[in-house]
Image 1 (spheres, one colour):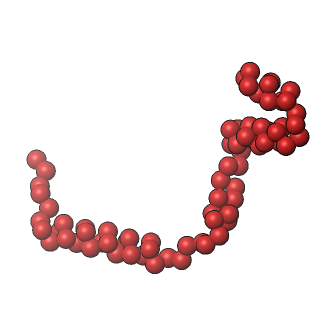
Image 2 (cartoon, helix red, strand yellow):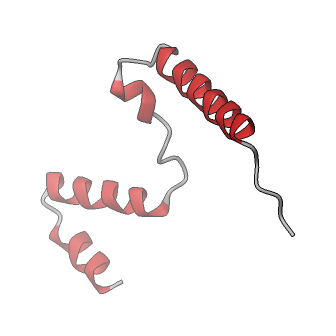
Image 3 (cartoon, one colour):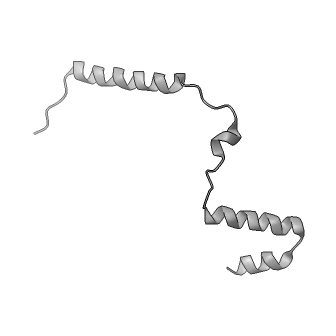
Amino acid sequence: MATNPSLEERLAAVEAAIADLQKQVAAPQPTNWLQQITGSFKDEPAFDEVLAYGRAIRQGDESILEVQDEA
């Protein structure tokens, strides 16, 4: 049978959670969005495919687009 935590215990848990949230909010966040996402798509096959599509579109190479559409 589980015991119910006392009001004091519950309040202490809430206060600890609030203190943790306040620390997270107070920590300085990087303002440059590019620094935040740089490397996040490393070794991601879907991103490599997107890059190939973009390259093909920029170069006007329709054969690459047709081959990748069949895949």
